[in-house]
Image 1: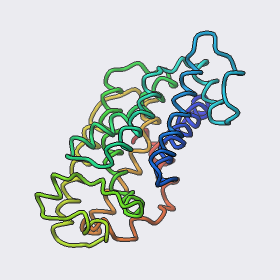
Image 2 (image 1 turned 180 degrees about the vertical axis):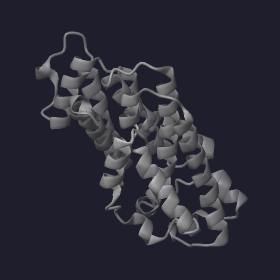
Image 3 (image 1 turned 30 degrees about the vertical axis):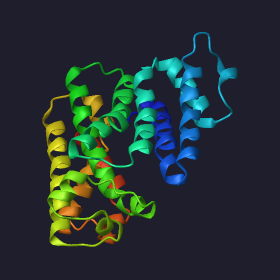
Length: 258
């Protein structure tokens, strides 16, 4: 990512991480709700007419977010969607269908790309379309990646409709039972993620937007590794850090690919 947008992009991603990790930091829904409300209040203060730095809590991410919102005029709706999507998931704690996950990803992942495109001054409907598809692909992959974390919290986030169709119980998911039926479930979910990734990559977008979309490389690497493990989502090798990822990101940036 070019130096001019690297710092504000880091702040946007830091805000998203702060909000996203709340559900992993506590098993108490009320505590999580209070923490999400803190960030909603931060956004309210940032966008309040006549607001200044003194109105922002003494939180490094909140203070840096205030600066870039003022500098780049970031749309409030995208930031609020990052908070509200997590708040809604706290209430439902499951997804009925794969389409529900797509809608969640559109609210919890895609806004990050919309915000980064705004920072990069990219106003292009095709780039927005690609961001939507990439966000959905990444959001679906995040559900698969986080299965061990979800299991520790006794939460099953895989689509209930697909589990029922393949006669997989929630208990089997929580116990990490690998089976042919379970792999069929994962294959269907991963295939949808791959479909969105391919659609995003086929769209012609401005050069700078391709740098914004570099996380697509990580999504692709995970799906490829999952395929090599024959869609056994419980294989612990999938949780290992990809030490070659920084090189892959740099290489694709040079090639102007994502």
